[in-house]
Length: 80
Image 1 (spheres, rainbow, N blue to C red):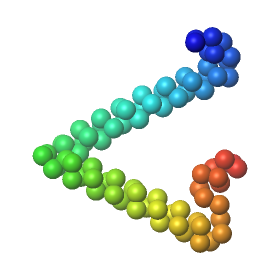
Image 2: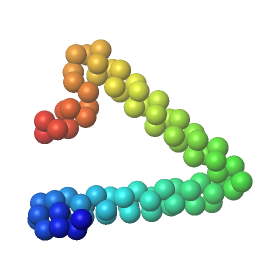
Image 3: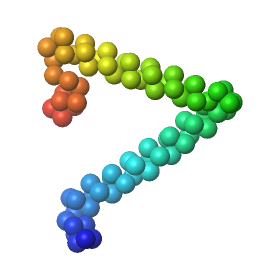
Image 4: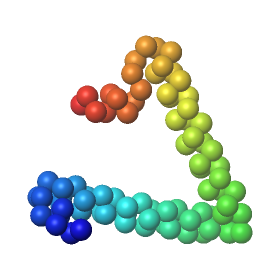
């Protein structure tokens, strides 16, 4: 099973994925702690508000790109 790591390109991509997952986990914990410091027992409300606003912004942006005839953002990033 570990013989796939002998391919250098795959090994680098796998290592980058592991680092990204660790960073995401640390960021999640840090955001939770920051929300608790700011709002105390209402930290869930703060995090819920952040998730709500990020989701709403994403939906608006995707809808706006679609109405303007541009490809979605994920396709434009791949083209760069």
